[in-house]
Image (cartoon, rainbow, N blue to C red; front, side, top):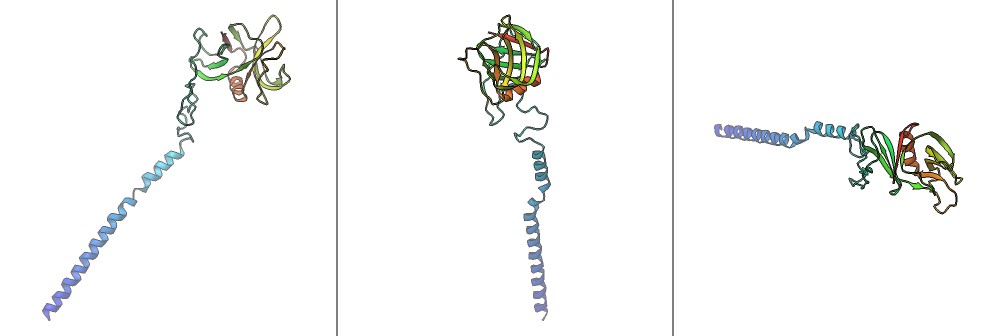
Length: 204
């Protein structure tokens, strides 16, 4: 009878030990699920980033570097022409048909191609003389963000503007006009940058 009792006790102890080992194994498997707080923190950090992956205040891609900011690609933007002055200014290169908006630190904040009309201004320094939010171009088109910088002795007025419908001047037109046409988006950038008195440097 004593042997039978001891056998029962040993069997009970063995079952208890196996149950303990099983519980410890269950805890070990469940342990990796605990560090979820770090994943939540990472997702919270992702929410603080913009859609392009940049954090607020890092400047995005608007640094004049020529990066398009879309797919990590770069667009080659020509360097600011030599001899175009210093300081904050608009630089208009006739040969390249391109404009640069340059900040006080000497760095281009924006650059874009333009479409000139039949008459070009002479190379040299000018300044913004007048602006109009809307108007009518010499080609009869509704225009916006008009920034004028010169009028020559023949009465031709030179200025930057954008056609509301996005059209460009007709190079075959017999009219002698000095409009420099921009896209609507570039026209807005020019309008925000070139207030009255802003230096405009025209180079060949």
